[in-house]
Length: 627
Image (cartoon, rainbow, N blue to C red; front, side):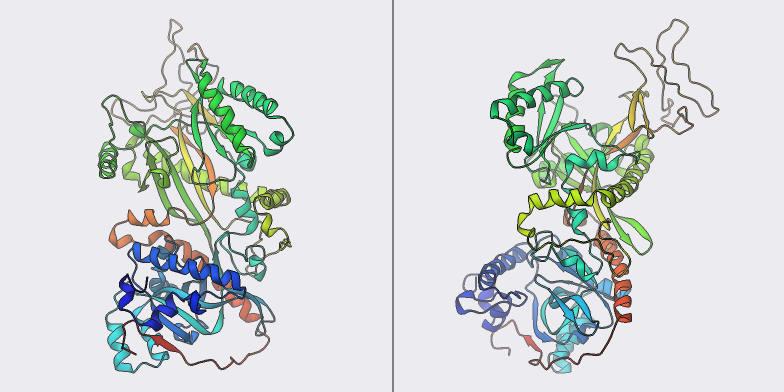
C-alpha cells in the first residue's frame, strides 16, 4: 500500500500513524488493544479499512497525536460516539454531520473502535472512556486542533482556510480520555455484554437487539397493537434435533401442504438472518394443485436451515408496484434499472415481476419518538433487498398513486408507532426468554454476560426500545378496480372478507357518511360492488360497523432491524440541500438524551482529577519533508 498507491507520496510518519506496521510492531492510532493476537488482527484490519475508505471516495484523514480534548471542547460539549470499525462504509454519512452538530447542538460526534469501560475517579463510577476519535472537523475545530498541536498561527490559519462547510476528515488520539455521553454501538463488539452498564444512553440495548432477531416471535410481539404481520408457521431447531431426517421432513411436508391451502406461495427464511439472506420464495400450489418439485425443494430448505437456526415459513405478500406508485416514478425506476443492465418491462408481456417494501426508522429523543428516514425499496426478485439488486428511493408522497397516497402515509405511520409500543410491552415481560435465545446465537458472550435490569442515568430502562428500523408492506383492501373486497378489524387483528368463495356477499355491513348501510345486492340478488372512489377518482367515505373510516389498504409489519442499514443509499437519493438529513435527526435525538446523561453525571462529580502529563500534541504532516 505504501509503495503502490497514493500513500507512496506521503511521509513514513503519517503512514505509521494511520496504517501502523505490524511487522515493525507499530500500531495505528485507534487500535487500543492489550492482547497481542487481537492487536495483530486489527492492525491488518486497518489496512482493509484504509483501502475501503479510499475506494469509497473519502480523503485521507488529517492525523493528530495526543490532542488536548479541550481543542474540541470535549469537556463542554456532549460527546456521542459511534463504536464501529474505521472502515465501515455506512457511518461516514453520519460523521459528515459533525460540523453541523457541533455548531447547532453542541454535540461532538466521533467514531472510535476500541473505547474502554473504566472507573472515572471524577465521578466515582464506571464510564465509557474514549481514547481517540475519527470524524469530520469543522473549520473552527480543525484550526483549534492545529493550534493545540503547536503549529504557528499563520500556518494553521492557512491550512484551515482551505476547509469548506463539509469539514475535514481527521483521526486523532487524545492526551487524556474523554467520557462518552451517548453510544451508537456495533452489535459484534467485544464490549457488547457490559456496555450498557455504564448507564449512558445507548442506541441499542442488548435485549432489544436480541429481540430483533426473533422473527418467530414477531406475531406474538405485535399482538394487541392492531398491527399484524403476515401469517406464518415456525419450524424449530429442536424439532429437527429430536427426530430422524425422514420423520422431520415428513412433518415439514405436512405443515407446508396444510399452510399452502391458504397461501399458495410462501417465503422461507432463517429466523436470525437479516437483509433477506438465505430467504427464498417458493410457490407450493398452482390452481389448487401441489407442485411436487417445489414442495420437495421447500421441505429440503426448511430442513437444512433448521439444522442451525429456527425457520419462519410465511405467506408471501403480493406486491402491486404498478398500481401503488405513479407512472412517472415507474419510468424513473425503469431507467435506473437499465443503467444497472437490468431490463424491466412495465406493461409489455412478459411483464417483469416487481416487488417492494417500505422502511421507517424511529428514534427516541427528549420529546419522544420521531421518524428519521422514510424509505421504499423495489426489486425484481421476491426478496427486494438493496444488497440483492433492489433499488432504494426516498419514500415521499408524490411517488405514490394519489388514490392511495393519504392512506399509505397514515397506515405506515400508525403501524410504526403502534408496533413500537407493542414491542416495548413485550420486552418488559419476556426479556428472560429473549436473552436465552440470544445467547444461543452468541455463546461467546455467555461467560461474560451478567445481565441485570437497570435504568440509565436518564431513567431509560434497558428492556426498552430507543431506535428501530422497521420494514412494512401494504396489503390492499380493494381489488384492481378499487372495489372494496375486505375490511380490517383492528380489535381482532383479522382481515374480514366481504364476499365468500362463490362471490356472494358475506353478512358484513358497510356504511356511508350518513351512517346508512350500503346495499350489498340488487333486486335480483346479484352482488353490488362497493366502490371506494367515484368516476373522477375522488374518495367515497365509507365506514365499518364500529364507525371507523375504511382505508384502501393497511400495512403489515415484516420485521424489525438493528444497526445502520440503508443510511447511505438513502442519503445518496437526497438532493444536495438535504444531504445528511436523516442521520442528523438520529444523532441529534441521541444527543438530546446524551446531554441529560452528561448533566446527571456532572451532578455526581466527587472530585477534580488533575490530568497526567502526556507527550506534547503533534500534527502529523502528510507530505514528505514537510515536518
